[in-house]
Length: 427
Image 1 (tube, rainbow, N blue to C red):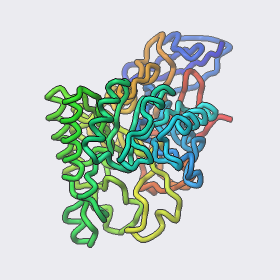
Image 2: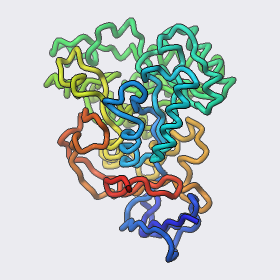
Image 3: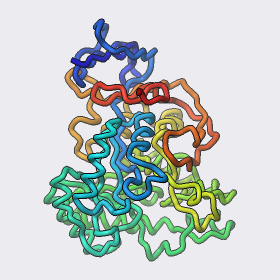
Image 4: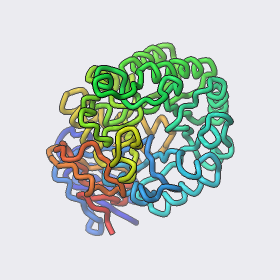
């Protein structure tokens, strides 16, 4: 029998510190507990939350192991407090068939630091022309399908995907970008882009696709998930769709909760991302939408890139940022320290809602006796400085380089086993 005692923690940041006893991966007791044979973690008053779930992670394996692997990405995830991540399909080869998704799932199990769930492509080769083997991949356990990095822009293809997803009881996650409105786009279409001479990426390119897909999802009564919401207008569309009973959920990234297009002033490609950084008004609207539940959850869109793909001129740089190890701190800075969320709210947007959207029965569960011990301990008073070279990812493309951020993960527990502690992965 594997036994763990987590001493002196405050579930959801509430009440006096208690001990949590875990046996064989399940919470067995909460209170004053003793077990001489147990492994012990000293929580020292830390906040105890359900382990985080990331619906949007790029692990790059297979194909770009020079930028990230399932092992290094899993390390970053565990250090960031995650117990489950969803690996996007834009690998090489694309995860548009059972062979590739089974490889990703198998490698995740072999590494064993987090539950790695492969995301299947919606269309063959992410080309948007022909549906991929949704049924075959669903039989292997795939619960989420996305062409992320590309929009499923053909409305007929998207409707068919939603119809199949309803029959298979899975979720289609859309990268909302009307490609005819973003040809050559380099930055949010607005004052900053005009002044800097960068081709604009209009907000309407996102909002139009979200509106279209909400209408399609409502018509076929299927579940739709919107990736990386970035504009206030998209939040308005989501509120309208949800009020009509549409089965739509949505995510926002940490960087879209904090950073604005003013960061583009230096032309540093570390700030290039898709969708682009937007305005301060958009940032405030996204924070409100997340607090109110219009946007359901936070997802990192963790996107590692090699040095040569970022240390170059802006137009040639690849879009994307690291996110797994900084996500919690950004959520604390933007949502907790602004009184928009309490710690139960953090659990909702980083664990409970993403687990429910993906249909994970053992993740995002309440901290109660009898529940799976997928947990994260957080020191809310910690301050730390981000150094890309010190993060677990192979790549170092973080826009938060040199920033001092609040809160830090003390330990991560996956089914009763400690997978990360005090910035380290146990041997």
